[in-house]
Length: 316
Length: 316
Image 1 (tube, each protein chain N blue to C red):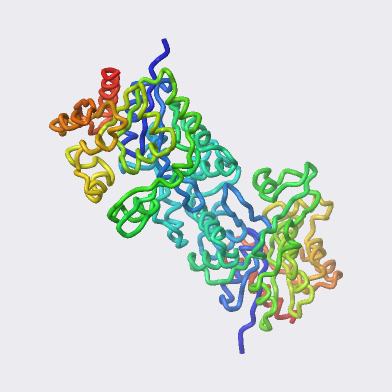
Image 2: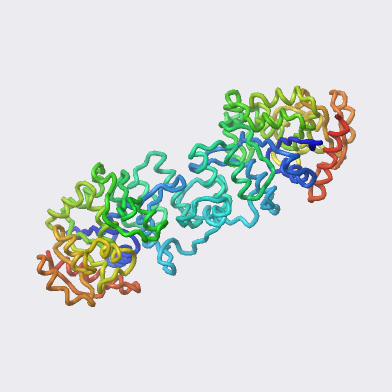
């Protein structure tokens, strides 16, 4: 009998942690990733795909675990020289990281799809898992703030998430078509479950769900869709999720994340610190499991991955 | 009385040596440079101007004197990472150098002229001398070889000057118009002389002369035009000049360089090792001076610059 297959939807650093845990338990034949490209952008003539790169570097064992982003052994000679020349330096581009952006941009200019380019880059980094951009056409997350709309990286990096958020728009999502690779995986009869990694619901996962065909498939999936809460004890492990919820007048609670995904979810993974919230999530008609979702070590990542997979099996 | 002004025409590393010597004797008000852009090219989406950069780095005190090209303190992290990704690595791009290409490309994409971009980059590197690209529009040196025509950098870097040369073409030169900055300098009533630096006549200086308006102005100049021989004792100090002459069936002699420029030159600077050639150059109707043209040290560069300027004064 063919092995069960799983699809994990992931954004940045938080999602990549669980992604790494899942790769310790599932083979490349059993697991693939759909990755947010809503925070992709063109900068200095380069196509930059931050979330794809975070996952690539993580799975290649090349992520910089000291600073939590970028590549291990990264250096900053280019940035020093660019600063000297009066160039745009609000977005840090490491010397190693630059190679990724230059090579990706070259292949895209030559007419390749982002899906194919990502596959080639993954192969070069000896990553065997399929990493699927949510779309081959540009979808750009735009952040509505009290001071006006900002492109995602302007909000996130340049302005350090300071502006108060009032909403989100995924420019290009309506026109984006499902890639044949994603369709194949979501329609695969061997599909056993879909995992929404603990990424920001608003700017990491929602852009993926906004691509025509993905939300519909998940909402009508015959297999369990489960999400791991990125909010633990009312705070985000990383990034601006909790700050955004505050600004959007949404209570800082994992329950609200479950609520956010309620039309999709069969199951929701709560952190042990939020065990008291089980009943509130259950009231949404969503099954729960409570475990340690804070991943500090590789064993933490593997344990959570194992708990998620067992949860999915239980829900089937 | 306003100071005399000089224009120096230069290509790569050899020319930049004399250029540096000249800057030790003349102020930014007294000296400007017209630089070959025939070996500019688009690579990995970047506009690369090797000869402009060589001069910029040299005058900024940032040239790598150990290896004879590129920037001091250069590192190669980007190239290592690009190689790992299977990218195009035949052209070396240092981490520091990349900043120049990225920033130049960004400004050009934004619509600035290469002349303005070069001025801004020079200012950022605190180079006060005016460095004028020979053209704001693309002129591309094409090398005819026994195996077919090659773009300059393919011939020069990728194929390491191995193919036997049969001729040259300066694609775009006929359509290139003289920049107002070059016209202003060559038409300046204070112009006292033009110096053709010891660069390759075929691929460093001829592209400059091919730009409509430059050759004509030099040929009819009321001030002395002098060239310093890049060929010494039948060999090129650097680069493929002597090899090209052999392949073009031109004797490897400084006399042939004088002959090459004969319609322009009032004076020609021979190396002491070639003192015996004075009569042959004189027979072309060109005045000569014999001095040490091989520049190993900064005092060598200054001494040659001083000899050239004295020579020009003598010819006036």
